[in-house]
Length: 115
Length: 115
Image (cartoon, rainbow over all chains, first blue to last red; front, side, top):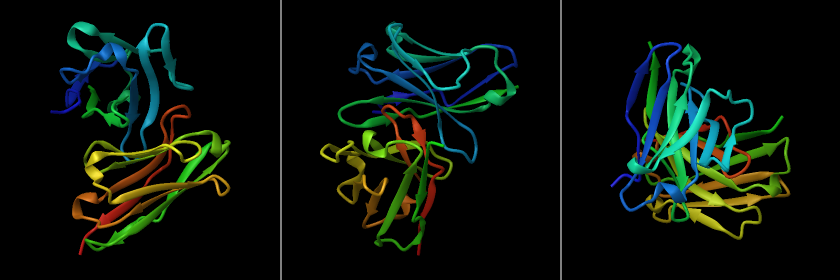
């Protein structure tokens, strides 16, 4: 069973907000993990956006706009990346990541399209 | 400028070996953990291996089944990935990265396993 599941795609209009989910496998409690988020554009390596565990344990990547933010939905056992005020430049693949059982695990990735 | 630069990729036959190198610059390499991550064509991110600052702690993805070996030379500001018994499914772009604190990635080097 996949450890981190992300929707394969998401489309939204410029200026809208997009909420990307990263659902942890049953039995892995999202509360105990730092969730890392990366953005990857075609032909380029991933770029670190932020990490989020709680409001008191979070970090924004250097130079990353504040319209990118992290949170969690404990009821869904998921980490969330919220992109506010979508811009055309936000069109990219987004991956979540955790450190689990002495290994990094990446999510399946979400392709965000800005219509 | 803080950067990681990979080299050593190329075309190799199934069953062959390849050694990837990653040169670090712009920061105190010996103070940061390093990782290798790969991405198959059109695919998602797959973490492969981690090495601590001193090399005393090493972790691998279970999927590698002992075929890959990570090493580092802090005097040379470099990290390496020795890959043996290569298979077609190892075809990917290989990135070195520092995922824990520095959150940086190299540009990647392409490895193609084909006869």
